[in-house]
Structure formats: C-alpha cells, structure tokens
Length: 266
Length: 256
Image 1 (tube, helix red, strand yellow):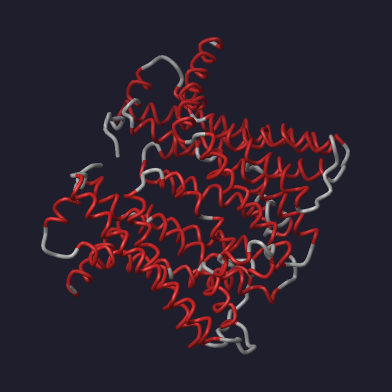
Image 2: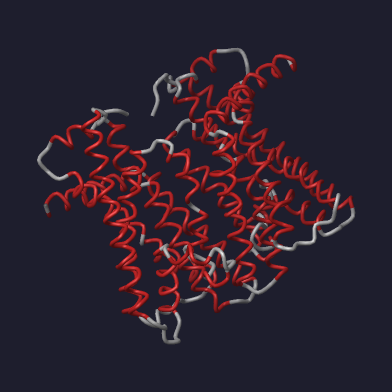
C-alpha cells in the first residue's frame, strides 16, 4: 500500500514539475517571478526604514521572507482546481488510489518554488539590509522554510478539497487564506500583539511556529527552542493533512452519491 | 457615444456584482489594512496611520486595473463575444472605456474600506484635513488609472507573453508608487523611476491631504498627475486601436 501511494505521489509530482516548466522558463522565473518576490520582501523591509527602526526592519524582512513559502504553497488550492477543469476528476475518483495522494503530489511544484523563493529572499536580502546573519547557522533556515511550506501545503490541500466544488472561488480562497496568515502569524507584528482569540487561531495554523523557529534560530537561541517550534509546525501540518484527508473523502463520497463530479469545466 | 459608454458602465457593474472573484482586491483590502495598520500601531508611529490607509487603497486600485480591466478585451475573446461586439456600429473603444471606468470607480471603495477598518480595529479616526485637495487627487488618480488600464487591456491581447509578467507587476509598482514608502526613502538610483509613475505623485498628495500641515506645491503635483494620466490615455487608446486593427488584418479577432 505504501509503495502504491508512493508511486501515485511520484506520478502527481511529475505533473507538478511539468506544470512548473509550462508556467515558467528559467528566465521568466528569475526576471519576472523571483524579482517580484524580492520586491515584495523589500517593500516590507522599507516599512522598517520608514519606522526608523533596524529592529522593525529585521522583524519585517524575516517575517515576510518566510511568509513567501506560505503564499506560494497556498497556490495548491488553485492548481488542484485545474485538475477538475481538465475533466480528470471523475477518473481519479473511479480509480482505487486515494484522491488526497494524487493531489498531494500534483501541486508539489509550489512547495519547491515557494521554498526556493523564501530562502533566496532571506539569504540574499538579509545581508543587503545589513541584518546580522550568523553563519553557517543561517543555512538551517532552509529546512525550517521547507517544514513551514509543508505545513502550509497541507492547509492548502484541505482548502483545495473545498474549492473543488466551487472552482470560481479558487483564487479568492487562496488569496484570503494566505493574507490572513500574513496578518495573524507573526510575520508583521508579534502574535502577542493580537487579540487573544486571534492568538489561539494563529497557534493552530501553519506559519506561526515555523516562523518563530526561524526567528529563534537567527537570534542565536538554544537548539531546543528552535526544534520545539519546528516540531510544532510539523505537528500542525500533520493535523491539517488529516483534515485534508477527510475533506477529500467527503468530496469523493458526496460526488458519487449526488453525481456532482462531472467531466465539465468552469 | 455617451449611450455606449453608459452601457459599458452598466455592463461591467453587472459582471462585478455577479462575480465575487473579480472583487478579490476589495476583499483583500481589509487584510492589507490590518497588516499595515498593525505595523504602525505596534511601532507606536500613529502619525503614519495615513500610510496604512493610502497603501491598501493603491494596492487595490492597481490590482483591479491590472487584473480586471486588463482582462476585459481578452475575456471577451475567450467568451466568443468579441467578434459580435466588433461587428456592431458602436465604438468598441468607448465601450471598453466605460467598463474600465466602472472597475476603477469600484476599486476606489477600498479607500472607504481601509478608513473603516482602521477605525474599527484600532479606534483611529482619520480626518481629511484638506478635503478639496483629497477629492481632486482622487479624481485625477482615477482618471489616470483608467488610461493606464486601457493600455493593459491592449498589451495583454497584443503580447501573450505579457501574461507572464501580469502577476509580477504588483510589488515593483507598489514600491515605486510610494504606496507605503515615500520615494525619498528609496535608494537614489531608484528615485528617478518613481517620478514617471503617476501613483507616486498621487500617494504623496493623498497623505498630505490627510495631514493638518499645508501641502507644498499642490498645483505642480496635480499637473504632473494630469500630464502622466493623459499620456497613459494616449498610449492606451493608441495601443487598443492598433490591436484592433492588427486583429482585423490578421483574422485573429475570434482567436481564444
């Protein structure tokens, strides 16, 4: 069973890589996409300058660099909808493999793309804005960024299972989801600054703990604190993966029952 | 001609009412406002609150110009309604201008949204110290944005590769437009580029209009927005006419 799922995951990933190659050439990735991402992080870093505070600049640069992986991983919600538009959903539901496994592989390109963009933003712009980046310790931000991306990707999959029934809302849901995470996860202001109910929500959503782990790492905190937060981020990701499993199962069962899984596209 | 323009206005209003996804920029505005306002409030820089209102507004206006107005002609082609529209005696350019005007006007609602969110979430009431300056700036900005959006709608049809860059024209422009960062804070080599982006003049004037202190050199700055706006219109109308001529000549009007 594990081998079968791994094979399905790999097939999905092949489609994901093909998608990435279709969307970008290396030139458009660097000069259009990555440049745009670097401008986004620079934009927020300059808000720190506007506040005449190097501490704010550091906080915003780190927060918004890491946020990039969340933003891009959330595109899984959008690309899952492409599958339904291609008319393959009924075939996938009829097949013996798990729908979630297919979709988990099918949008993995965003995880790779987002992790690369976030890591480049932080490791390139940090020194440019004269942030203290301890070496080689700073390199450990890369696995933590991937871990944060994985966690967000699981939330993106759960949302994908929902928007597969309302394709016209795919971009809207993805955008509102990642912007909400930007506001409440500690990317812009510490989570403790927010109202208490929002803090509770932030603590069970992706990005919050992964970002905290990266902040601890770059501040030279003990490895235990970094690993605690990194572990929390992974645990939250697993929780959202479980939610995604239930959402996809419900999608398939309801589709079979009411015949709403059609070959058509929107 | 007025009838066609009004028909465009009404038609686009119906589309926006029925397609919540088209209003994504307006739905995102509260979140951008919360983020920007939280940053300035947390830093104790309440004097920068106008930035937290003007910034999300510029983002929404620009995003809708780029993504909604920019897609008008191409979406007509995609829907297969472009050929019959061209075949009617009504001016397609006037119709498109009407539709773009609706999008631009609707995008300005983001200003009210931002002010409301700042009030509700942080209890900060924004007072417009110079209402007439504010109103004139908003009017000129909306007009200039409509002209720029006309150019987008033509470019996205003319060059399919331009689509790749559509998503990338957000934050570089937010940086150059002074949406949150005054051009004076940017590196010296980047500042000349802000002078040709009409939004950088608009954002400065909008923020000045929200402050009690007298705004410097108002006529000159308004004139620059007007001139850049007219240039945007001329470029947009010329591009759109060229695109229509080219599509007719090449027989690609119905290509989707």
